[in-house]
Length: 480
Image (tube, rainbow, N blue to C red; front, side, top):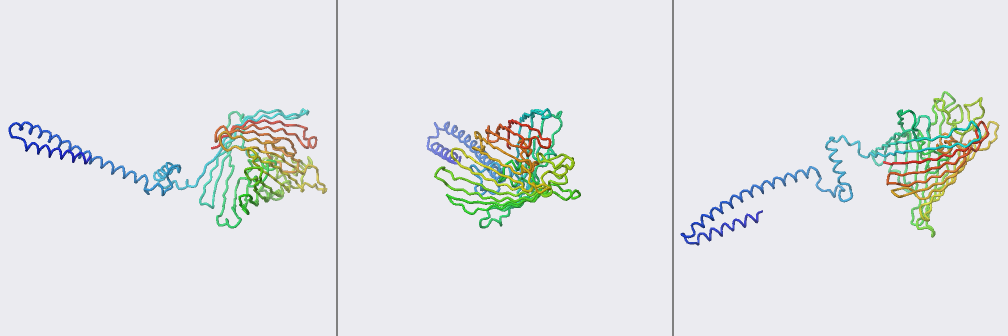
């Protein structure tokens, strides 16, 4: 723009110079014409000055607005840039400004959940006319979790889930109650402390947690012992160790202890509690057979269900029985289970190899030596075992996985109240096979087909029918 003004000024000077050099007679008409041209050029120059002034004002205003959007002026120093989510940072700052800082509680908050639709078909095979009728159920599960991190050491959270007040092993809701409302219950409510000062030497992580928590003992156990929906109530402590972390060999370890409340009712023989401890080793070693190192896990667990088998502590407050396959001593003393106590010892082993797809081989053995009766004799059925394999795993769209597991569960080998709810209706005293096949339709949506072929192990005793249960499920899972 400045160059254009300079050029115009030079042109005017040249024209005036030529006009002065011409003769006064014939050129008077030309001088008049040139004078008109000069006046026109001067008018255009004034308009251009006004335009320049207006543009400068707009530029100043834009620069001022930009400094308000980016108060620090340097996005690189803020960690912004390609792939770092600068749009989210800008939105966060705008929200904070709009709320006057009232959004501070949202910092460090994580939300997660899932929704599952299920078809559940159950076919009972029995020669006894008292056998159960077949069922065709349509069910759903809805869960939503919230966790707040106050600092790197402290987290507090809760989650809500569908389910039933009378079943600790299922968050399913069955359709078919005349369109009535479905319950949403408290699934978890906990506080967790993981101090950084404890990360010294071989200690990789130290965790203290209390409340209604995730089950820390699922780490080295199968659903023969714990259904995945069980949420213990009380406190636990967990230490993770890293002893060796080499390229060809590594060795980690962990120890978990738990103190949980089963039944708080001192007026009927004292409280029932669960005291548990679990310790495991996780070696990793390279072999000439596979490109990736082989990963192992071996663990021993001890569960002491103190005062659980007596005084009806295995019943809910409304009288619902959660014995679930744990036998009763006699019909005249139904408040005591057949097993005098449950002090369960389990041994879990898992080996993960990578021949083509990740392949996990696992087994678990459980025994309840405290099943001794009042006569001091150990009854049959105080042991359980499980053997299975899992090929591949679902992580993103197009992934698949398949699982096979065989379980034999003696009637008093485990606590039936907390075993897998889908295997023989969650009862102890069962044996059979489990097949599962899953495929990821998208990164967050997957479909599963499950089959449970189960028989009773203690048929013909204490009113238990010689009955088989074939169960087939189709699941559609959406995670968000």
